[in-house]
Image (tube, rainbow, N blue to C red; front, side, top):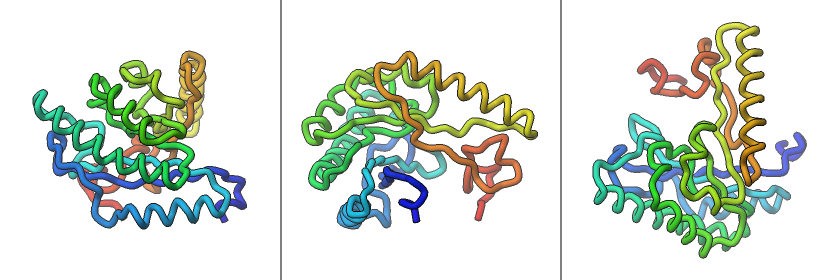
Length: 220
């Protein structure tokens, strides 16, 4: 059915988890398995799709952008753990001919760290395909110290739409203009990695919010 829509890429999103924003106990999240992921990659490729592998971080009660160890020793531990986790993904991506590997997704607080250059260089040694990164917001792109090591730049796009059709029109027009300006300044192609809105009455005001993060209540 997906092929019938004209789609030619699929993004597969395995999750790593850590126990809190300051921890470095990174591991593949429960219910995720590398061999099952391998089978899914093969299935997608057999159907004619190009495949992007986009690992993301789960943090209980928070999100990936809040990850931030308390001191330099904590950062060293975190980058060591993240590098090991991503090296496993890079090997899998190479073995299965994955078309794109996303080295990080929405790691807003961690993105200014200098360690990314060595980490991404190490991933490139393990994986020869297209390397990308997904930022939380356009203003985060210029803060990243390893932009020149990437082949493309991705964005998560959940702009507030407002409460009326007129507000939604104004807000989306501004967003389009902002994206065009960003694309003109980048030395790499820009792509939209995530876009959407949840099925909720007030979703236009905060389309990025979901589940238990919405006003402290759980969503179906």
